[in-house]
Length: 241
Length: 221
Image 1 (cartoon, one colour):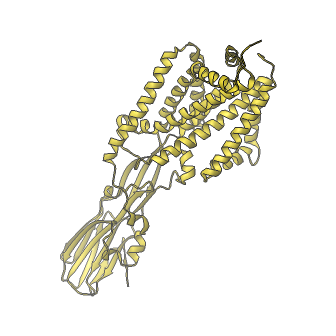
Image 2 (tube, rainbow over the protein chains, first blue to last red; image 1 turned 180 degrees about the vertical axis):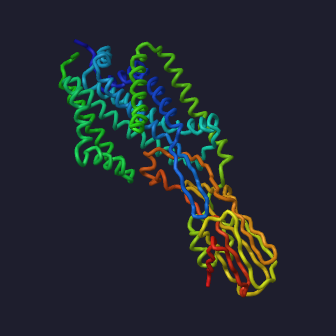
Image 3 (cartoon, rainbow over the protein chains, first blue to last red; image 1 turned 45 degrees about the vertical axis):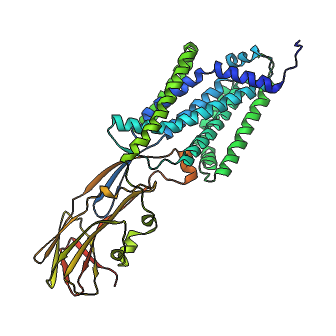
């Protein structure tokens, strides 16, 4: 029995700073996956347009879309990974409970999401530079718009963090019952083959939302619900299971 | 089948990189990871800084007037020659005292329209204006890349020599889809091209004929 009273905020803070150091290697996979994504983005997306007066424009678009999608995939895998037993056992170095463990995990995922969002948005400039140096192609990017740059980071972070919450929920479900390892992929693949796919409707609900405030509300509520569900699932587990 | 394979390859490689990095993660020294991150972020920030210097080679920004004026509307109204428009690519004047003029062309697409505005006076002067525009919705004006047709007059003939089919290659950077979702930018429809259009201002009573490949359109009546 401990004689000192453990404060939740203090514990979360300690666990968070420990996890930042212990899970720093997750960042090396982020760098690796973003570099691969940059490589894939080097081809760009081509198109052609012509005027009735004989003018033909062959254009090639470059963007960090692939980098962002790969980063979201990284977030999903990382969120699932930190719910696994070896990672959970790290927590027992401290005075802990399931809630403080989950809260510090969420903080770690938020940090990873922000880092992923910043690097994904910055990677467009690396892409531009590589195209210029190695493909001998001037890629025009237009005037630098700082508010749009910040919007890019915020939007990307929201997407990545939301994917983290999905991954964390999947990880929590798998910890409770291993049959979810099969059930989750079956549910996802099965929904693709449903007539008017649920995935399409979900895509429209989030990705087609043009209003930032509505998008923010949708993503924050979804993320909060997923994390709350994960916390309540993990709370029901016995200590050190 | 090939398309499916090509689209699957990135996913397979992505999964392979993740699995390898997860395995590698256990062995990787913390210091190496720190350095990897510092170098990566450093390279990204350096790329951002270099991109500012690369902007000096970028085209001018589209002027506001161009954004709100429709080129064809201005041409059909016959008002375009009276205003100082940013659509003007080239301008020539020729002294001409004949009563009729035959227009011939080289490298013109069949059905190319030549716009003709009759002046209110017979001043024995023909003005040839070339209008055109090539811009992108991100505000960049690439009109300088358009090679305008050359116009020459000898005796009773005006020859318009088009540069042939012009192919302009252009590489553009787009924002990530997460930004385009809010700003409304689309991936494909960002480029606008008009012209090059030949617009002639001729004396009031000059008779004009043209070859079958050209279509003459009088404007501003």
